[in-house]
Length: 449
Image 1: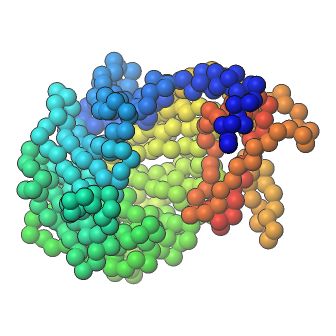
Image 2 (image 1 turned 90 degrees about the vertical axis):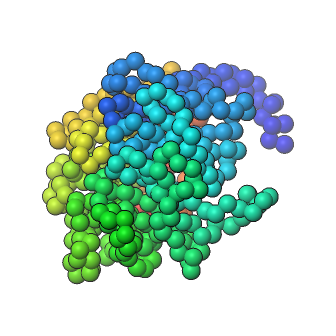
Image 3 (image 1 turned 135 degrees about the vertical axis):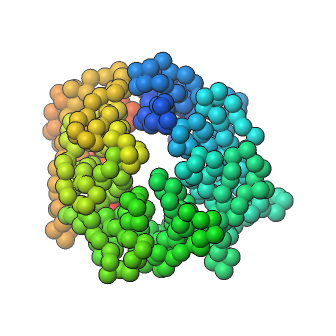
């Protein structure tokens, strides 16, 4: 019915040609450094999947490391995660087939490009966390389903294992299991200093976690309960010796950064490093010995830098109304990267120096339009109970807003999700044709309750 109507529109072919041209631009992922190499994803414009490249320097000659487009003729086999060893010599990567949640993980020698014999199956909802000696990694997996039940079996009885590179999966060492709690899932984090294994225990999709940890100085050390209930969020972001840092809603509905000393774990000894602010704390990390706090302020990104004692260092300035993402990296490396985009601003990749606070452009997406031809603004309107709600409005600069402009109003409210400004070719096409795009932050989604 839909296409029967759309095919009658006389301008349909013209729109198709223009949107195809707009979409055909090089798309880059954020660089990451592993060992002495950088890695990033790139799509030449219309590829089904992005290709992973390796370079010696940010402006070096790229070398293809992984091309998922070669894995299947119909494009249904995809790259689903990468994790580099601390020395950068090995990379574990996940393969997803046909959109299933199941992942098969393999290991590559990144210097030679050779795929090693390792193959790990029956993994889902789990990442990979390398041990400090670069010889293996921790991960969570389920038991192999009964024959014929691969896609029907329930997600029960996840277990945490340690895999040593070069050995079969059957030899992996069981690190933790909780058979009396079959609905629990586990996310593993081996701390960068190699001293601890931190296990975040989840149940369902709520941000309410238990935390377990193991002192890795002795393989016989027991798993210890640090948080023994599902009452709050404790998202592990790093450690400084025995002090574990978490993004948490403990006594802070808008989230804070909390530090717990594992040698003195009672709540009266906890330290709130970065207190709750008027803005919502979306995420946090430790990069270059500093805390990076990612806030949501009126549905826009706000990044603040603190030292590990919680003292404010600076705020990262962005070139307008938009969304920034990234700021990942190692705790002992001052270099990080982020991407900035908005409704009329294609993604731009920046390198950020944690010591100096300087942002420098690595690359800009080249799309066939001029961002200066468009206006992006934010207005506020009153909800029924008097709450001021923000709305973004974007349109062509030469458009006269007279109340009769075709307007696409898009909103979403639920699951603590707030919509932030982002670049979209289809929305750009709409604005280019003279349409107005408006996006309110509906109640029920995140920041505005």
